[in-house]
Image (cartoon, rainbow, N blue to C red; front, side):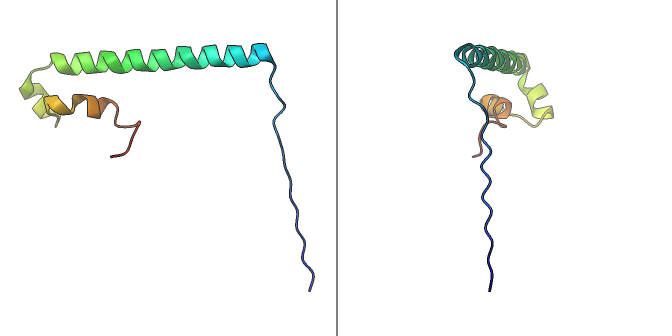
Length: 74
């Protein structure tokens, strides 16, 4: 009986110092943009009346959970 095994390891080339710093800065800017957007959404929902939130199927105490629901699983 014959067996064959093939292991292929493909590694990405190492990035230089400035490329890593630039990537970190871009990641930070994207993260801040996403958080600012979520914060605006929370403020918009908190400004609504309880009746408006009820029409949307939300309660005031669940606004933050609703806005961040895609980031965690409970």
